[in-house]
Image 1 (cartoon, one colour):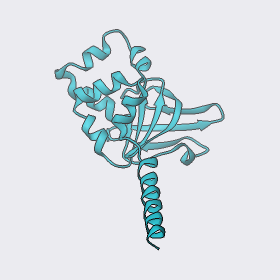
Image 2 (cartoon, rainbow, N blue to C red):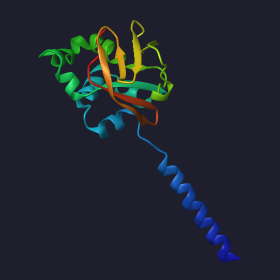
Image 3 (tube, helix red, strand yellow):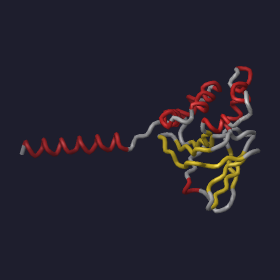
Image 4 (cartoon, rainbow, N blue to C red):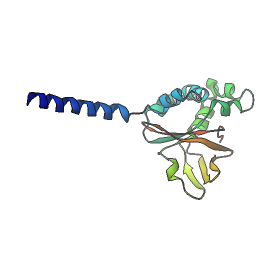
Length: 164
């Protein structure tokens, strides 16, 4: 009887341990760091004072431009945006890439639709076709990888920086 109780207890501990570690994902910032292609985005989020917000806000969607997307901006743009005197402009650009809700690819409509961003002055138009998903503000970006899960939301990797 004692052996049976010990076996049940050991099995219960093993099941609980598997459940706890298997389902946990990192927050948006840690997930982006682990991917390794968002160094510029993460540096910009730090400079704008938004990194903590991205790490702790629940139920968000981030359209995350890659390092290559930032590199495609005109020469000097990123450096200029990272200056302290341009923080408001940087916040406006970065908050345009964040939705205050989770939007996964299986929730996309068959026609273009508009979504509000954390930059309340801006909305994005999302279009899903057989060719892929496009996100547009005053310019557009293609989703190159969708549904990168994090414990506080989802990241969709995009190939351009959206601008107000």
